[in-house]
Image (cartoon, rainbow, N blue to C red; front, top):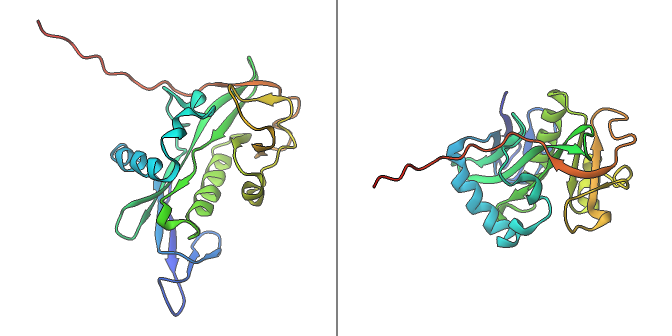
Length: 206
């Protein structure tokens, strides 16, 4: 998979950038979106704590992520020009109810606080959606602010018969169909379906 590069353009290279893939102009520092590597995890987790706080681990979405790996090829980070991690988004495999269709759960989407408003989050979202569609997934669900995610096509129109496995606000439970009709007749509580993380067993020596 190619990186999504954001190339400086204009009189002041640090003020205006244009996406090499979408022609979308944003005001920010140059950054690159890449597939997450294992070596990125410590920096990602520290950034998530700064951006979202410790309460992020108590959200209902975490029940669907705990002990699981992201969907194959769908974990991304944004790096600034110095290579520092400034953004993250991951998507997770879920099933829609008991024995239901497969879908993706997006989250968390987070950006380094000092980079808020710089277009990093939007770039991560568009890249993640495009990759999920390219890989053949039918739908993406998330819990988030409807006005923000509406710009990417998300709405609560098809989540009324679905539920998260824990407390959440109904109007914040949103979905985007990547394949038309993918969520028709979908119902039930979302269940984790991703690959389980490998656990390392430590052998005790007497």
